[in-house]
Every structure is written in structure tokens, then in C-alpha cells.
Length: 412
Image (cartoon, rainbow, N blue to C red):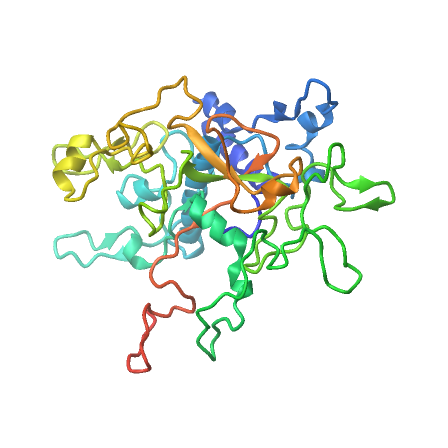
């Protein structure tokens, strides 16, 4: 997980790339990527300086980007995956930098592995196929590419925000096994004392640990004694990190998570990696079983897995390829039923969490949740990215399970 909310500067890199790559032929892609800077406007508030400067001016470079919808955040994650993998290929001399990417001549991870992006290759991997050309592009099995960047699920975000590793009296390290016990529970990301102020007996005692609104009109205290030293959003590395080393998991801005909103909990249905919002996708293939040609913006076409394909290929009770409504409590919850576009709760309704500079302390608790249509945006909502950890759940390239010293693991 990113240690901070995504910054304005980082999102500007994205919009610059989109403009440079697509604006000549597809100007609407640049417009679609830009955050809505008018989210700062209020009928009885003077916020035009924010409208003009917050995303663009260098004073806010390291402040969290806002005005980004759930769908825009998702597209940013996809773009970041491709740029990161492209950067790895350049760093390892499998590709030369290509500053002239435009239209369909754009690096994406999938188009590269499918042989549909050549770029300017420096070298390739050796192909051991007897009838092959002797060379092949890098693929996932080579251990070079990274897993996809994405939004965190609601369960992942809440786990990360609580930081309960800090409540373990004897956490695991290189010398000892950790204890399977938590001494206290948290209702805030700041530790088991569950207070919004620092309790350390030093010069920081009593300082607020997050950027939030104390009371009506009280966004940062009084002149000469600013209690959190921020009126709107502020520097993404301000305030104290939680036990996982993450900044602003409470306050500053709310954050989009990946889940589709429904009023009830689904954790009792699937307690392994719970998530609501699955939409199963597939890549398209031609008659000769080669992958479909990339489209005019350089992406390999995808389509939704049909309900019939799911039913024919799944021995479990899943009967649809789009599962926003699965067991959500209504009478049609196991079908592909859609609430309808006029409902406040539909398949485009997404969850956000964390509390913001404009919220009371109640919303700082990781267990609280709110929702909004995913195509809308706000001056109080940003996001951060996560990446799947593949393999074992612990670090240092250790295998999963307990070995009792009888098995040696050789890092490749």
C-alpha cells in the first residue's frame, strides 16, 4: 500500500502523459483524466483560489489530489501499472525509452507480452522453443513485472488503517516468532488509547494526530494556537504514521476503496479476502486463437465473461459474471439483477472511508463507511494505491507455512 494519499504532483504526471500521448487524436481522453477542480465551489464560500490553484500550483504539489472520481482513480491505477513495468524494462535494458508514444503505439503490459508492442528493444529473453525465433519478450514468469496497482478493497483498507500490529506485545521479527495475541482493540488508527491527540510527555503532547474539523467552523483552532495547522487538505506526510507506517489513514481526505456499496456486510458470506464488486473479464481471441489486435489507443480489447460461461465453467453457486448484487439481501440477490439507475444504491455506488479535513472525529474511525456514485467527485475524497503481495504472506522472500528448520528455501 502507498504510504501516503496520492499527491497532486503524481496525478499531474499522469494527465501530462495522457495529453502528450492522446490529445491530438483523442482530446476527450485528456479531459476525462483531469480532476474536477470545480468541486471546491460552494454557494456561500469563497473558494475560487482553490479552483484555480489547488491542482496546478506548486505550493500544493505534495497535497492529496481531490476531485477524482472512483472511475478516474481506477484508470490511474491501470496507467501506473503499465508505466512502472515499462520503466523496469528500460532500467534492465530490455527496452529503450520511447518518448514518441502516441495513439495505438503505446506500451501496455499486455500488448507487450502479446507481441503487439515492439518499441525499441535493446535485448530480449532467450526463447527455448525449438521452432521459435530464439528470442521472446519478457513475461510474468521472469519475475520482472510487478502485480497490478489497484484501489484497496474495503477490508484491506480497514485492516491497514487499524494497524493492529502495534498492539501485539511481542511481534514477529528475525529472532523470534510473534505472539498470536492482541492486547487491545483500536477504534482509531493512532493506537489503543483511542484519542485524537498525542499523549507522549514531550513537546508534542496534546497535538492533534489528524486533520479534521473539531466543531462547526473550527477547522484548525485559533490564531496563535492552530491545533492541527491545516484548514483544508495538507501535506500528505503530515501527522503521525500508524503502526504500519501509513500516513493519514484518518483525516486529511477520505479515500476511495474498490468495493461497490451495499448497506449490509458480506464478510459473513466470504471471510477470505471479502469484497463486493466482482466483474469477471476476459481477453478476446481471433479464429486462429491468437489474441485480438490492440485497439486505436493501444489496449488489448476485453469483454465481460457472460453468465452462461460462468454457469458452464464453475461448479460453485456463482451464476453471473457481474456480482455487485450477490447475496445483498433482496429477493433477486442471486441473479444479475440491477437496482436501476434511478436508485441511490446501484452498481456504480462506491465506498469511501477515512474521514477528511471537513469531517468530525466520528468519521476518523476505520469502521465507518460512506458511499457516493463512482462517477462523482469531491473536494474531500482522494485515494491511494495498493499492489497484491504474491506468494507467502511474510517478507524476506520466506516461503509460507512453518518449516521447523528442516526445509531450506533457495531464493531464485
